[in-house]
Length: 404
Image (cartoon, rainbow, N blue to C red):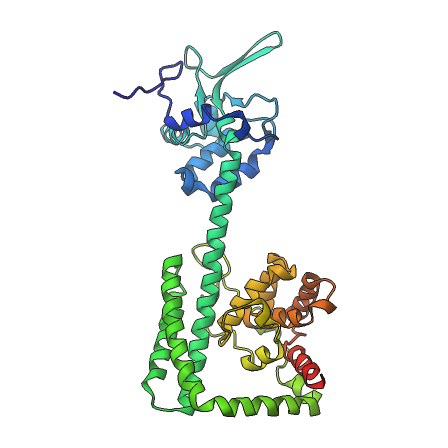
């Protein structure tokens, strides 16, 4: 029979407690930890520790009885409120419910009971010595680094889902645009109806909270259809498109005014389009409520790629669709020293496609830009005011290549 250790008041000690007790001193944080920041981290990683929101509410109540904001140091981390005091601090939670959640926190190894001989919670002072009986918060403090790592892993997983969701949204819009364009150049082909139907179904699915696996499946399906559509469109049209590229560059060289009119500045209503919130997570997601409010930039993608040859040096993937340009911008953004916050703000104000164009255009002039992050924020502010368009930016790069 397996031996189960017990506490002084005959309560079993869980194996989670034993792991904390046997943990070497080197694993204990070497500095005090803010108790409220630690609680927020635990809230983010609660699934990894098997606790619920109600459990954390009770833990928050216990932490409020600890007089200092920081756990650790030389301070004894035992709180000794009565059941009645805890329930009052929890806005009248029933005592039986409170005890159940306390037991879950103890079983999870986040608290430890330090019982007195009679089971009461109190503190006794004998000269310089102080002995407290109640709930010991030191297991929570000892696991601070573990909690922080688990919370960071959750954030990274959420970021992967958020980024993949944006990519799928851009692919869906690429698919709808190709279906419309394909119907114009080769009417009656059944592929265009398939593309249009898939784009509509994907837009409907994106209104829900989707897992990473669901989004990966959508991406695979959309990539297959996009490749099929692009192969059909590019077949007989490649030579004509190349001719149009050369004509477009000469036209810009002769008329700078018309090149600026190619992509008018965003109106204020369009500048914030596409920043809807996911009803489940509260996080910004693409195309949740109004999937067609943000339009694909008027400037051709192939012209952007032709104007920014440096992109091929730093990104090895194909860029034939807007979602691929977005993926390329996400890939090179950290190497350029652009922070996550600046990048996300640019996407909110410009839209992901235009923000991606700006980043790859900045890469082309990277040696001339002293602070890429500050430069992007300045352009973002202009976009938020409806005073910026990426068209002239790309046209200037095209003009430099032509002059060279």
